[in-house]
Amino acid sequence: MAGGMKAAGLSLDQAPPLDLPFRFFLTAPLFGVAAGLVGAWQGEALVASRWTPGALSATHLLAIGFLSQIMCGALLQMLPVIAGSPVPAVRPVGAAVHLLLSAGAALLGWGFLGGGNISLVLGAGSAAIGFLIFVVPVAIALARARGVPDSVLALRMAVGALVVTVFLGVLLSAALQDWIRIASFSRWVDVHLAWGLLGWIGLLILGVAYQVVPMFHVTEPYPPRLIRWLAPLIVAALTVGSLLILIDREGSAVVSFAAAAACFVLFAVVTIRLQSLRHRPRVDATLVHWWAALAAMLAAAAVWVLQGAPELIGSLLLVGVGVGLSSGMLFKIVPFLSWFHLQHRQLATGRLDVRIPHMHAFLKERDAR
Image (cartoon, rainbow, N blue to C red; front, side):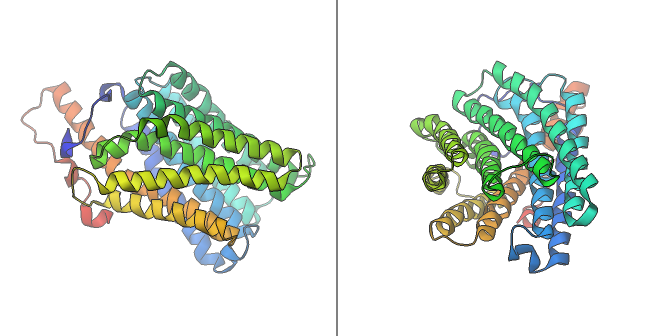
């Protein structure tokens, strides 16, 4: 394999066509740019409160338009590879999910900035339908998965957390339109954020990390006991915390959510240790992004313990961990998929006289840094 990466257990021949994940990967940065423009326009108002129109707009542009685009595209690509289980009807599913998530993120982003209730309703509906179309075939693929059990378990739980996140998002959207009444609205927003950031994004990072950290960074595997129990403990903590919120036991719920946060602190510490003992001493752009993201994860936990501003915690998790880590992974995954695609085409057409660029030639290290 290119660059000396470990490829044991991967089923690369089952991966979908290159254009499927790339449509997600190419669209996502546009929403990152849009969120940046919202920040430049709003200025200090963006971080003055998480309830400002700019903060709500930028959050959903990043969460749905950037992060979920990348994660959905990556899962459609990776499930056949790391779990040996192709997603049913992957082409129409991928096309529909890409279109609906793009429309949903754009409409929500515009709606929160003053585009009106129609934009918010259409945006929430488009995103919810897009996630539903994504979840059903991906759940079928995960049910059939025969890959690494602990990675598959974390991915299954991540998809389950996505379902909870979307369900809560739809309820909150309905409450904003006065269609239903929700007591303690702000607390349920916190639960929505917890399931989205710690559940959907966090568990997906765990499931992917168990495979890609040893492969890309040439480290020892994660401790078996850690990867067996970490994801179930996080889901249990989020579930208990949500139920305590439901029965108005906010003090006890904080303890439960703290347990979920502690699991991610443990994950960050173990990952940093594995990477520091890696067999290949080279420090590339992806590794730098990992370190920055893990540092942001630990900083978010410290700010939370010190009862710092929620806006700072959200920024550290959404931008520092979410955007930082997914960007760093794209700098590795996109060149690798491009290289593998060309190698596959070369063998399929018998054009062995054509020289394929080395994986590192697709994206210069200096640019990635």
